[in-house]
Amino acid sequence: MAKKLVIKVTAGADAPERCSQAFTVAAVAVASGVEVSLWLTGESAWFALPGRAAEFELPHAAPLPDLLESVLTAGQVTLCTQCAARRDITEKDVIEGVRIAGAQVFVGEAMADGAQALVY
Image 1: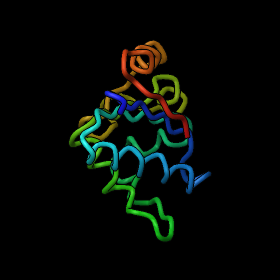
Image 2: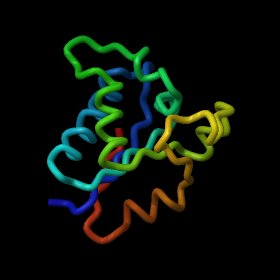
Image 3: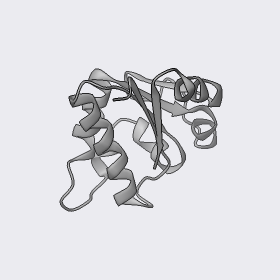
C-alpha cells in the first residue's frame, strides 16, 4: 500500500460525480490509515471556503462537508495557488486547516518515495 496518497480534484459542481469520487476516495483513505494530501484545483477551489461544501448536492453520495471534515481532521487539504488567485481567494478566506500552495509543493508530494497520485 502507498505510504501517501496525493489526490488532485479539478471538478466541482460542474462535474459532481467526479468531484464526489475524489472526496470519497480521500476520506476512505484517511479512515484506512493512509496519509492523504487532497489538492483543490479548478472548480473544486471553491470548497476551500466556509460553507461552500454544504451547497454541493449529489444523490446517493456522502455529504461533501463530512468528507472534507474527515480529510481536514487526519490529512492535508491544499488549495492551488493559481486557482485561488484566479478566484480572489486569500489565506484569510479559507477554512481553518486549508493551506494554499503551488505546483512545486504538489510535485514534491507526488514524487515522494512511496507516494501514489490520483487526478479527478
